[in-house]
Structure formats: structure tokens, C-alpha cells
Length: 229
Image (cartoon, rainbow, N blue to C red; front, side, top):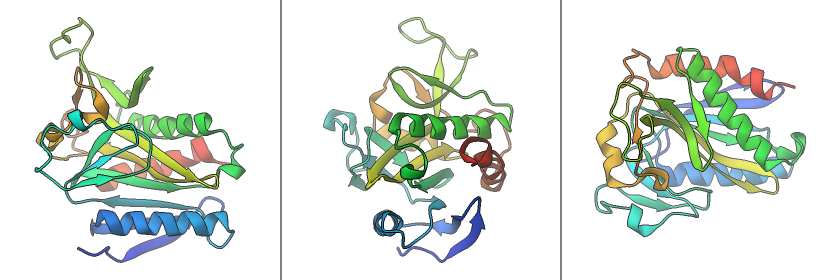
């Protein structure tokens, strides 16, 4: 599978906004990100946000534990150098690869991650979904009080978005993924992000008739609120 043609448009202070139709091969995406990050660091290309979907696959971050890959033959597994553990990508999930220069943003990695989380939360709020972050649990979560409590007695929560980045010369790549309407059964081949006590959800699973285009509009609308000059 080859990477489809990209649609590009200028967006917010010279950041290039790319959106791919169809399913993008993971190796092709990784090659593009690495080349673009190097070009941004060298001052040879603008920053870039790339919106896409992948075919079904699992990725392993630098903290991935092999025991969390419970069905290794289900989908292709890609080793990455981003932070985090195992994640799933597939159709119905909006992946946004974030190639931004942190030298313009204070070289504060923790704050940058918080900004990415804030962006996801702001976009979800466009659909009246309350996304939250939790200490010790990467990603963005939604409370599910209608579901049975967890084995430890906590109110049930489901993960709706994942996050993992890597830096090269203070330029980020990899990024975020938000579940719009993926096949949630596909998450069953891994322990997502090493967390087994809580589940996974999507906008459609929450009962919202949201399309990928709807989410893209929400992300475009809220990006300047978080990352604007």
C-alpha cells in the first residue's frame, strides 16, 4: 500500500496542514515524518500537521511490554521510538501527526504534551464530550458512570484518545489519535497503553453521530485556541 496524494493548505502562521484520503501505510508515514522533522530542524520546511487514517495495526512505544501484546498475529506490529506503550491504529480513528518546532514554544516538553492534551479536550468539547486526563494514565479519558464500576471500585472510564511523541532536534513527530468510529474489538489484541482496568470508547460508541470530517473541523477550530501565537 502506498501513501495517497496529500492535500495541503497554509494554516496558522506558516504551519502546513495536510490531509490524506484513504489508508496510509505506516512505514510511508514514518518516513515522511522523519524527513519532515529533519527539514524543519534545518529550516528547510514549514511545520506540519498531518491528518490521516491507517490500516489496522499495532505500534509499540519505548515502554511497551511484550506481555501486553496479547494477540501478536492479529495485525502487523511496528516498533517505534515514540514514548508510550502499545497502541492500535485503524480505520475510523483520526491520527494527527504533529511536526512542530519546540524551539518556538519554549523547549518545554511537559508543557507541549499538556498542550496536545488540551487540544484534544477542546475538540471533544465541541461535541459536548468531557475529556479528562489522569495522573499515571496517558491519553484522554471520558467517565462512563452508566457502566459497572471497576474491580477497584472506581467509576468506569474509557479512553477516547491516545498520545505519543518523539523529538528530534526539538522538532516533534508522531502525535495524537482520536477514536471516531473504529472497530473497538481491534483493541483486544493489546493492553492499550498497558492499562487493563479501563476500557476504550469512541465518539460513535458514546452515541454521537460524528464523522471524521466533523472532528477535523473541531480540531481546526480549536487548534489556534491552544497553539495560537
